[in-house]
Length: 250
Image 1 (tube, rainbow, N blue to C red):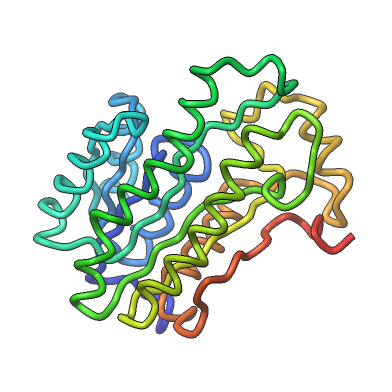
Image 2: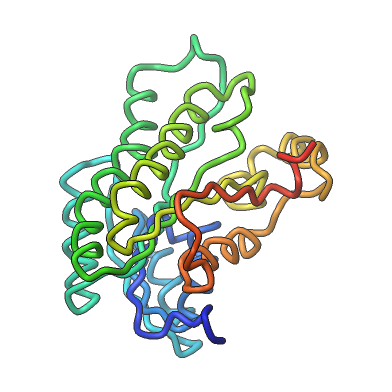
């Protein structure tokens, strides 16, 4: 597998009990990484871990509510302990993606979205990147959205939180890149997951605007994440990779 091989690496993936996160831990484990599956739902998390172990992979589940700062810090500590003293790959995938009129957003909604989408990645990077830099290697992949770049009605709250993530990606690349830590982001288009199932025809209509003409499968996004996490992307830093079926091209 060469530069895509992740044997010996420890990867922490947030929001890993379903959708893109579950596809990502499965793929990283398939490529040899020991994965730490983080999420709120223990039964789903244990199911993801069992499936990975059944295929011969190494995985452990750590319950965490990333809207709570203390829970985020404890997750980082537990991941390091499970990884034998280090985490080599961090995938900030957990996110909330509400949409609706700006005037209908409640204060608690705004706080919850920014806590999960912005503060949690910030605290995890603060907790884990310095040790990566000290070792001289590491990879961080953040999840964004096409709504971070394109103004869309009803997407002000979600889009703005992910626009912050894209700037953080570049700032962290500048901060930690000189010490061997690569920080990049993936910007997915519409993806068919449990979380987007409720969108129904709206998801298909959004996907129809792109050349691919369909929503992505979670595995297709996971492939991009795994690439950025691997040595195959050794010269890629501070990039935001669109994986949107060509939406950004038209």
